[in-house]
Image 1 (cartoon, rainbow, N blue to C red):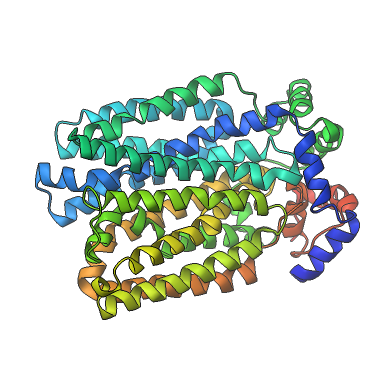
Image 2: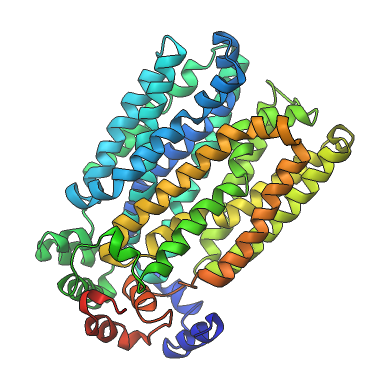
Length: 491
């Protein structure tokens, strides 16, 4: 069934609730649901802060310890190595001790890691401590959206899950501001890392007062507690949603990577892995990690070695998540993908032309191009990837699916980060940015071919979509269709 047919069928069967009912849901959703999402999103803020802070610390650390370009790349990428490790066990940890307790563990690692990194006496220990922090980054990057998605009414699930991306962007923005303040005041790089201990403590304390998710409670057989929590976050549809969760758990067994690779669910695996890799191969983290270096290439050195220009990047990254939160459950995921990837590809082509013909002559135009590029990224594939990792996979396969996508994402991020400076030296700045532009074009084709429009769909309906030949069921048939296949899957 085509995406257009699926959307039309869904609108007809659900009475065209897309815009009007969504606002009713926003007004009627208990404040506790928003509080849960906001507290969990602190994990996203720490994620953003810890990947953004290195931008301002890169040059001072390189100068203090007289690093070669290879060691410099490794120091910048150390947090990504830890993120791959965190992505490998984050899903299993969330299933075993709960999403909530997993985030509390991550809060402890974030806090201790921030202080240890700030006190590192040499580059070797600095890299070790950054890897430790990266473990928390990788694990929380998948646990946070899963936790929020499982505690959100489906009609506003997209907006609430993307709160994580807003928090990530805010963390990056704050890291740039604090980098600038620390650099301007002459405090050096150590306070830049130590500051992350504050939100780390806030996350741990906040999660202490939050609830487990109804799905995890159901997995433990604690249905009375699951009913109580569902009543707090989604009282108007409590019985219906809890019934979906109960039926799905009763008719399925614990999932495995082998099952995710089976014909029934292989499409979800391909979709998640493709988005994970493409999100990084369009090159955004070269700007986020090496921003001052790129501005230096273009002759832009406004304020503390380009950190003032980097603050502009952080502000755009943060502000452009806001329309995504407002639009994702109205216009849908795929339209935002199309708009953002088209804009990113266009800006990368222009950036390549600027460096090909002499970026210095383009002046502030290079900064404008980069800001538009980051704005399109923040509006589309940046938040939407993390949302899709929480939506694409069947419930029993969500942990392994999200873990697989997260590891692929951080691995691709690591590859781009440790090769950027080397690629620029070998190929030239223009060619490197044109390669990233080509991946944006590939992304457009991939989204059209492999990504379903999940706007307004329950997590159970999305499971049926994959197991029934990529076709959407009518909402009233979702539970029947799921129950008819052993384990919720059909070959």
